[in-house]
Length: 151
Ligand code: ZN
Image 1 (cartoon, helix red, strand yellow):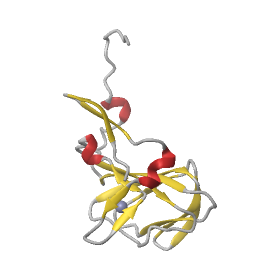
Image 2 (cartoon, helix red, strand yellow):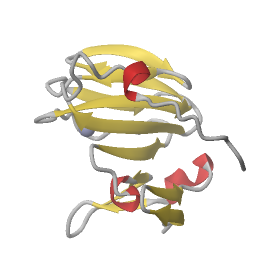
Image 3 (cartoon, helix red, strand yellow):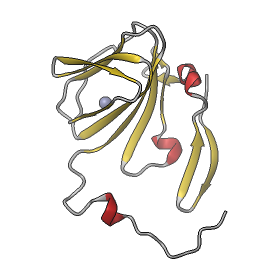
Image 4 (cartoon, protein in one colour):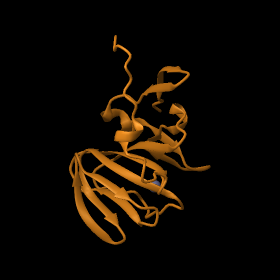
């Protein structure tokens, strides 16, 4: 089973290495006493995230999520990193492929299927829906410092 490698951490950061996208299939997620989901890894705990969770998952050709799901309070963004498939929300399906990015509100009944001939890998980022207010623009929240940038 593959494991995340911590690169470095400090007072204000944690860096981890997932490995190559081809190796996401080698992660295993314990789901219960007798079931392990292959090809999925959550990074939130390893990174110490405080307002989001994120996971990578690889589906082999023909494989789907296995179930529809919703969330109580979390919105999700799915980024298709590799492969081709179909995404489904509330019974509506549409094709997705490398580069597709899908936002799903908590109540959306969602699933993903690999309909291609290669592995499909996605990144899913989840966070509390409606947690940003009107003043949460990335342009106003970011603070550009006057410090000289050195490496
Ligand atoms: Zn979810």
